[in-house]
Image (cartoon, rainbow, N blue to C red; front, side):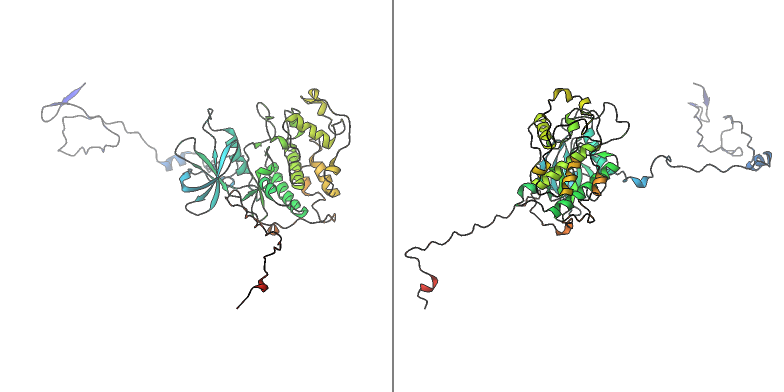
Length: 431
């Protein structure tokens, strides 16, 4: 290392000069004169005015291109909710457990800040080995994409102390249709069924318009508040559909058995919104019967029930049936007419036509949600009586999800039996 003697006569290494150091004054006599610091050659800078004069006068400087924050193909940020850090689940006070499903456990809770009653769905992540489950991502995405007055509203996603504690916060709704149908002393009126079906069809039409398939529509996934409004919930099996379908196609293990469309039972590798419309038809029938339409224990028994109600499929009713994977393994019964009228004797002609349009064999011939909303069964122009009831006129019921219990009716006293020693009130000696 090269060294130089300073004024004290000691040998010290020369300090490397930093670009932030100020230049020393050459006239300063206090600075050591025997230390030679080479100066960098100063670059000759041409003033900006001279550079502009050297350019051709005919070429004017072009303005800079406008800065673009995002691509023209990406929607503006206002189309999406703001991304913020997740709050802690301890911002909520747990009240009671509502139910436990295949993809999570639902609790009723209270927001400690606002006092709002919400539903907390704890995602099942304990046995997840491949990261965050795709079903949970699809559910959150579907709920965020399908904001509608008849779709349950997602509020936020909160987390606990570990990576397996993730909760989806949604609005709390007092009832689900399955529990109501089980506990109601009498079924819904025709006017009430029309109102519920209109709300359900409006929600499904909105989901399908946003390219979302629910794939698990059933009465237990339809929530209802005490103001006659239903909300479609539980998007755990929902997914975006369209073209291309994706690697591996679409899974056949979807939709609860009693509400599963026949094309899925027959092994169709691709399906569309028609699978949701078949489930809507099963829900419509359940509202009319006050019990599920196809209470089968397995897929073969379910197909047998479908064949009995609709009659076996033919080339006219379902041209693609004989090309499906499971068609060769199924023995069709002898041809017979459908049994809709005997199964639903009190349903009007328009209502029966709508039900048969929902439960059509051929997915291409099955009615869509948009078409069903315009069906004569709901319109006043067809003189279809009664008209849909306003939701505010619905009756209220005790909420099983909120832990409320139905008040037991008092047992009425038995009929009086006159005994020999029984005296009427007038027979007593009154002072």
